[in-house]
Length: 302
Image 1: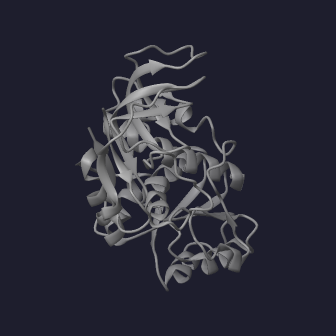
Image 2: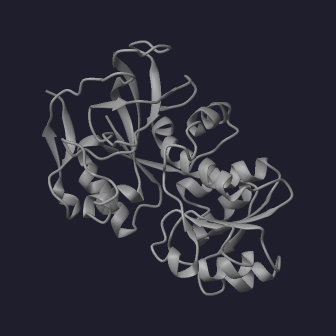
């Protein structure tokens, strides 16, 4: 029997236990992949703690993980255009990435020039970046502020926005300022001086993408002249400022991985630096991310 990091109950990282599970069988339109790498993200921590139990009902067995890359191992009824042995990356809305095998209902072929870790780091962040930029309706010539520009989503959103002809300001920590410049953004610092720093460059911005959810919405609304074009991925106080909270709905950006994988393969898209841990060490990955001591994208590797 295969193994997976199973969530045994809501609570601390130690509730993730490396355990035997049944081999999942692909249903109609699904593939089964032998997972080579899986991404770990902030939403995973909220699910583990039980913060989102009303939004994300747990599968049985309760295996977390929104994104994974691996080799196609089996095909469900009606699947075409992919073969056993193909290398793919997938966004997993129903979870399941933290295991030796996972089921996917949508997938993208992984080019040979893209490594397993990069392929696993792309799906969830690309979907969020593409989706929120579309929801903001950004256009060439506009000015965009990205809060959390050094994070996994912010890094992708910065590059996509710059490529679309926007002027991008990236609110980051000091360690990410140079990277933000390399990606074509103008770096500014988080904190109480954010508004003053922005006003040293511009009086207003056309839109704000909060990719971090760690504060700054009051300044964002003031800079954007209201909340209409301010969207956050994770700030639980969004409603206090009239700001929309964007969720990964099926129609937000279903083509995001297909759009961004070729950019990644060609070197036109860069990702946040990564740190690899063994798949069985999912609990450690959660502990590192929760403690704020992980400054890279965490990847669980087979």
